[in-house]
Length: 233
Image 1 (tube, rainbow, N blue to C red):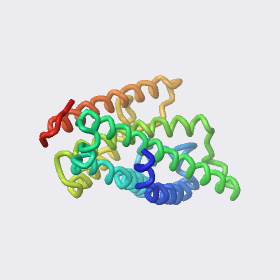
Image 2: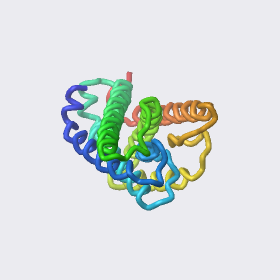
Image 3: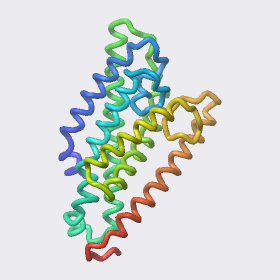
């Protein structure tokens, strides 16, 4: 895992800078309420303006960029890992662990960029969109679940097509989610705010976890079904 982080460390620097630039711009937008400027990075707001859609699509592009090398290694060049791991089941768990670690670090980058953006906004006298630590944690945790599902879907798609087509498909999925963001339903994976004492938020989290499990089952089946003459035990 140390080697994994070391190999993509420069990506986290770019992700932090990109997140900071996006959040610094959106935090001072008067049409966003409370934590919506942070939530929109994960698609959790109604995306009705070009600026919000642009920020969301940039965030998803950064997320794809982060996972691309690792996912390609596990799906297209798995022979390198299989020679060391010896089985596809171990390859699957290695892939899942890598996805989770990268997404944790992605969310940490977003959170720290948000904290710095808030500090600068408060220093310049803009206090309208500052949020509590508890609300930030709710956004980050639900954003993490969304990112894990997004990364697993990307990995599944990459087992079928090359990276260029996968990028187009994932971009298409993001475009569909832009439309879905205008519909506030509990079964959506987007971390949209709910106001019924947290009940709908809990339902949304549970459903998102269910989607992640289903996606991981499909991903595991795809990896185990690929035959390159190596023991699958």
